[in-house]
Length: 156
Image (cartoon, rainbow, N blue to C red):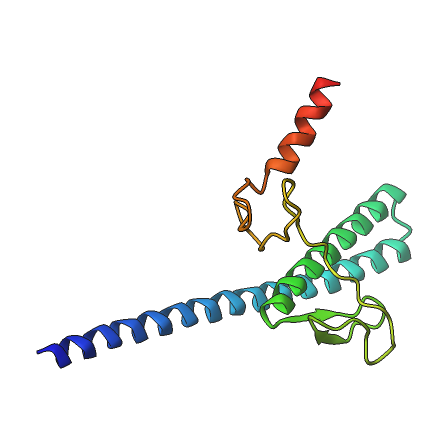
């Protein structure tokens, strides 16, 4: 009976792991579809901009389209960043080459790859793990630094 129980436990664990991975793949697929949709929208916006300029539309209309293009491009960058992070890659800011997230320089163009700033504990200075609510070293709240700055500004 103990062997059967072990098999059931292992099967449940495996099913859970498969389910989790399937959920992650589903989320990534949704992001890829969103990215494709945003790129399609961007193409349509560029077409609209060309038509507006060709037809000598009012400047307000042209500016509105340009604003939508800028917003759509920003949304594309955000989705791409999420997708790249899921693959442990980053994009070169100069040439767009996909690189390992630990790359210091692009192997295609040689541009320096900026690193995202690491959060540090306000109390002891230890590097905080992404999404941590408390410091692993001293136990201080991770948001404590932001709260202290707000309190200092309020006192002044």
